Image 1 (spheres, one colour):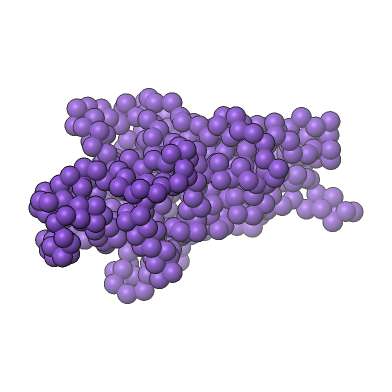
Image 2: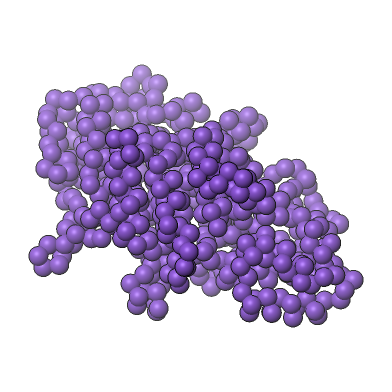
Length: 500
């Protein structure tokens, strides 16, 4: 259960390590592990004719790190952060695979650092500068009809830090005397931050207007060109006004400090991270406990993300003694794939994981359709969930089409691309089912083994009955088919799609 929350899928070896170290010991060990990176791998490859072709290699190294990286918790948290502070290949960044890889590495390296450092790294990364049009943003010039772009200023507050409405420490919405939610900011504050974020462009150019992307400057922080920064006064959050006459670096530091110290940040980040790792509907108490750690890690430090992640995973609600129906979450389709691949040691002859997951699973690393991610944290499908005032974010992409694509992919993976196949090509990603084929003449043992690997021994009686009935229809001498049927019926079941 812990490993499905804190990694890309449980393996027997990792489970043994957790058992040996204890949950807190395993988390501490993971917090100390360095990041598995993407950019050095991309930079080591031959240059293709068109740079966008390297996006396939970027996805490949993402899978390699997700499946085999020893920093599983760091990689899982980086993936969560990539769905909060979104940039995407689908759009202006399609021809910038180096920038995308660098951005993801930045998230991984800051996953257990300080949130204040993270939002500065995000703000100044060229991938974000391109994606939300802060790069090249310049001070007002009425004669040329130039006004600072508000895109990044708006999304930094709405999506990355504080949200649209004021929150209590437990994440509940603050309201006025009439029950109307209190907004966190108004248009004048957006404009103030937009003016803060002026004068930044690709680094290393002789001047702002000569700045152009290169392989080197798309992976280092943007540079300030002072002549294009607005030095006027700027309104920020909480009635704070930046004085006129400050430089761009000073304005940036003050503005990011202003956001960082807003009381919403703790509960906002707590809710988003709990949803990505543990449960879609954390209780107010769970949110408040995690937000309190964000506010003070116990050593007087605000924004310690390592302490926040640890608090999320060690909280009693992460693995309750008495589970309820509202516990847990729907697994993201991509995480269903990585869990299967890790449990069954997915490999290919050429060592690559060259698929386009966005097509089959509706998701891919840094391939969201917009800055609002693949799904909204507030999404509640019509019916029982919405009527109960609950949310299920991942269900927003669980369309009939996408569910069919996922099921079809698993069918081909389990039945055709496994270790018993005789005509595998070099790039085929296959799973190792040799252990299961060895158990195929004992249906009970086969079901128990698949249950252990994919459901942690929690298979329902109803699912077990269905699988047993199917396996009894397969001839005793067709071990590969029996093994594949057992695995397939589990990975396409609602029980596997649900993270307890």
